[in-house]
Image (tube, rainbow, N blue to C red; front, side):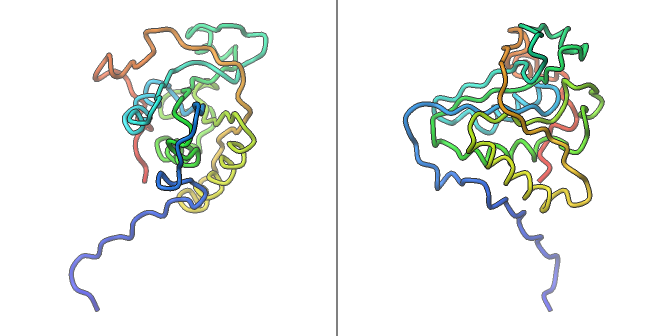
Length: 195
């Protein structure tokens, strides 16, 4: 029988993700779009861990709203009337990272089990959502979601919306890189690493 404290086993990473070792750089860029509550914290976390990727660009904006709600302002989105989500749109060199890894990172950095809310933030604009751009992204999003549910959230149901990418509206300039430009600014307490 071993003596002393035991080191817990490392967390199991979903097998549906494509590891960096398997990723092969290709021509062009890929796009991924996620919503996980207040977009300031979502942007900050993705930028912190992925800004080293070639051709990296991230922006915050609004998507997934009513078709007749054109070019919404932050105030309109916050009212809930446009039904848009606060979201981030990532651009990176094709093959620089597996889409499954980004989906898994999205899940591990917020609470995907609360409907239309994150922490104290309430409303449809704060919903958890994956907006897929290709059939391959849809298949990967579903596979990673199922594994995250099974491995990390057995007792709590994931309520993340998985929908086709819709019209994107870039948010006002003062929202871009908000936490970089305003250190100590508001960040939803659910935006942290969970595993």
